[in-house]
Length: 220
Image (cartoon, rainbow, N blue to C red; front, side, top):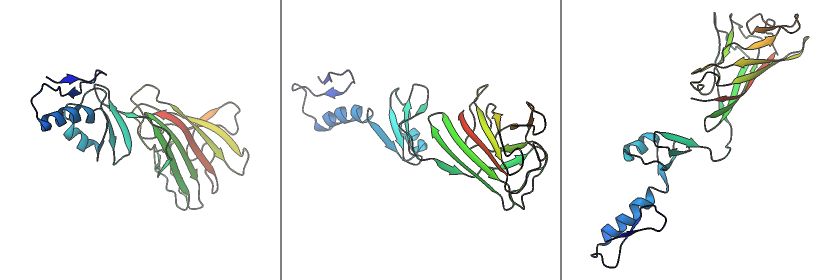
């Protein structure tokens, strides 16, 4: 009867005393080896249709999203295999009362995901025809935050020609969020006081003002 490999991987090797059967011998050799390699699939749905009962330790490459994933016994987990190029996305700028509109301003974003960590950088430049809307401002994130009490705190900053011409801020993130919540900037007249960013705080946005949001957070 067949024996198994010397490394405890369950690969069956035909013995000289076994009845000749090339098909069985080839299958017994190929099947356990293939499932221990990095298997390639067009998508997660194609993989799941083929691997209906995955075994802990199986590793796959998804060609549509270019990700390496390993099955940990309860689900497929993305494997960080090295930094890749940052991706761009178009953030959405909203407000709690009336949404602003960019006009001839610009809003750009880029991000890099490594495992369950997202690095993000967003820049908003106010234009001469930008409508500032009203209420506390929000900016959409590239991917949702994790379902945890503190998925992260993003940094923020403003730059302008007036005084003060620069200031740091921050935006604490909440669980399962698709955008920032309150973005806090220093009060330009009261030292040590921070206020939520709105159409009038820390001042009324003017053409050429630049606002940035950046940092790292846990993803869903």
